[in-house]
Length: 260
Length: 260
Image (cartoon, rainbow over all chains, first blue to last red; front, side):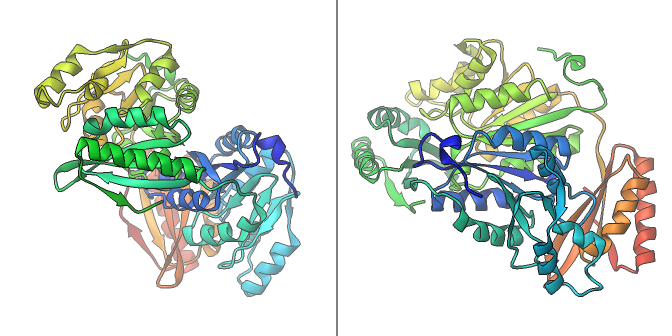
C-alpha cells in the first residue's frame, strides 16, 4: 500500500497523527492508560507529530465515528485495544465497518499463530485474531503472534502495552516521517505569573518557535518549565539565547533541563 | 445557571460526560497525563458516566471544535489546562469563542486573588486569570485562588493536578448525578483465549450487564480480569453467580478482585 501524502497533508515535511484509544476500562477509571505517553514520545522522536488523542468506549459506533473523523485529517491514525480473542474485542469489525470492507481470515496470520500455539490451544476464539479487514496488511506481533494490521492510513494495534510496543516497532519502517520537532527545556525557579510578561514578548519575537510554559510545585515552591519547540535548529537556538537573556535580566534562578 | 437535563440527555437516570485535555505537552510526550485517570475514577464513583476523552493542542481552533462537537452530545464537558497566566493559556478565550460570548473581568475573581496575592504580586499577567467568558460561574480554587468556571454545561478547570482536583470537588455539588455504575471484578488465572467462549455465552445471557475482559501478564503467565458492570444490582449479582459457575465448570483458578 502506498499513501499519497499530497492527499493527507499539504507539506511532505510535516507528518501528523491521531491516536484512538479503545478502552472502556480507561473511561471507567479502572485502568490508567500507559499507551498515550509512550506513543506520544515515540512519534515525536521519529518525526511524526501527534495532534489529537481520543479515548472511546468499546462500542462500534464510537470507534467508527472517531476513526472516520480523524483519518482524512491526519497522515496516520493509530488505534490501541480491542483486537484480542474475547467477545468485547470489536475493533477489527469496527475498522472494517468504517472502511465498508468485509472481514476476512488472513492465512498468513493463521500460519503465524499455528507456529506459536499448539493445536489444542488454537481455539476458534484465538483464531478470531487472524480475522482482518480485507485489504489490510499485517503488523507483526513478536510476543504472542496475533497480529495488528494497517489499512490505508489506519494502524491498528493491541492494547496490552508490551504487545502494542512491538507492533509500533514493527510498523514504523513502513511509515513516512517528517522533520523532527526539536526542543529545549529550561527550568526557572519562579512562578509562571512572574515569567509571563517576558515569555509573551519572547513568543511575539519568535513566532516560528512554540514557547510553552508549564508550572510545577516542588518543596512547596512554584516553578516553571519553559519548553521551546521548532523544526528549525537555527531559530530554536536564537530563541533559546533570547530566553537566557530574559532570565538574566529578570534575575531568575534557572537551569537547562533535559532536552526532549 | 440551571441545566435543563431534558435538553441534554433523554434519561435523567444516566448522566454523561466528556473530557477535553488541553495539553500540547501531553501530545509531545513531554508530560504524562495524570488527570484522565483521576477524573474517570471520580466521575464513575459519583454517578457520571465518562464516555469520551480528547487530548488536543493549545490551539484555539482545536479547542473550539472539540468543545462544540462534544457539548451537545453529553450532559457535561470537562476541560483541563490552559487557564494560567502565560501567553500559551488560551482556554478562556477559546471557550468564549466556542459560545460566541465576550470575555469579561470577573470582580469576584479579582477580589479572591487580591486576598491571596500581595499588591506587588497581582500583576497584569496574574489578573488575566480573573477573565472569564460572560455568563460563566466561577469555580473556587482553594489553593492558588485563580478560579475555574462553568459556562452552561462546560466545566473549565486548571491542568495542574492538585488544583484541578480542588476545582472538581468545588463544582461537584452543582452537578446532576445519575445511577451509579456498579462493578464486580474477578481475576482468572487463565489466558483470555481460554476464557473467551464462556464469556461470550455469558454476555449473550446477560445483555444488560457489560462484561469486559482484560488480559494481564504476571510472573510470565497470562491471566484475565473479568469486569461485570451494570446499574442494576440484581442483574449484576445474577451475572456474577453465572460467572462463578462458568469458572467452576471450566476448572479455572480464580479470585474475586477488588470491586471498582
